[in-house]
Length: 479
Image (cartoon, rainbow, N blue to C red; front, side, top):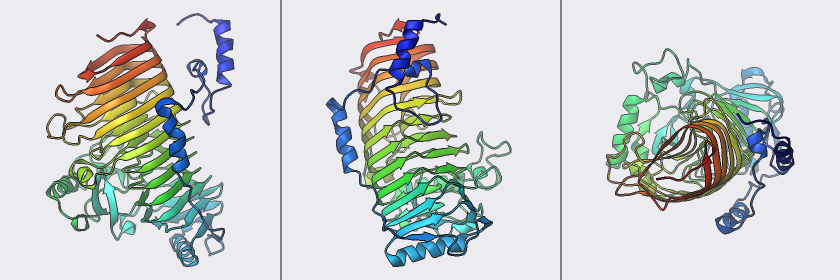
């Protein structure tokens, strides 16, 4: 470790004053020494345009208080009161369903247009972990494949102006007794195995039906299939807001918006360490803002997706125009991830002023795909990213899972990373394209990795540009 330099330390304190605050995180010396935010010019000039195109939901100024409808908030099953509030909202043309402080157990909550579910501070919604409650089946996506499956715990379909807000807690009720064991063998539950009631037979059957073009309405994968639902899913919705709430213990992915336009996820905490507990997975969505959030998850923190294999190509809607800023990532398989269900493509992603660090954070930036998933992935911009501890800093991998076994080569180009600072990593890079379809136009500038045990690999990249990048105190010049 280098000696203490008082002049540099004081300069870093001055620089720290210009940095955006991330709740619950004290800036390290690395974070404090970052340059101030650049201006919105060049490719970044798109960011203000994206933000101006995002419409927050318009909710009528009327309230439906859960306790006024008869709920006590004393840990009772409040399913009937949530249903009554939603029906009253629907009949009135919309409004705000208010959940006062207290503890409420419930089955699935299906929101309708022009409706906000708002949790007061001290309010807790605990979903009852009885799978039969999440029937009948609804249209959903599972690992990028469309099907009729268990209802997500909070769900809206083809709704306009929907919101989930407040300072309360939403607990999905998943643990090693219910929901999570359906994964089969995993590292989350000591007694889980590939035997018994697991997702594997249904997952394989769904993949076969997807490739065969079976109509979605005929893909029945609810009871008896053991495919876990996400905690929050807004499906084919416009003008969506998720703000302020804490989401824990999800059966599957935590926040999973699908085919939405105008999505804001702000100041949300996702804390779920079960199998596949991704934090926020916008899939085939357009005009997205994710800001001020804390992700502490058993899988990817943010994973941007667009459908898997035949379904992704059939629907053919990319996720595009995404802004991620002022977020904090702790545990996870990756901080910002594109893929792996990415067959519909991803473009125009902007990440800035985020902080990542954990001994259990596996990757900082990651693109994962293969020759079965393919995908056009381009115009990805990252700047002012501070990473404390991570295993791999930058990963672009065309050999994820199935690897080079398909006919759909990924098309990945124009990836720009600037002002990245990492304190400690096991490996700087794991970047592997195909010789016949190389990664094109990867640019890394004004960045440093203070300690890396290994440089890792960079294979099959054309147009690699490295400018003012140091690793272990030495200028990095790729061979």
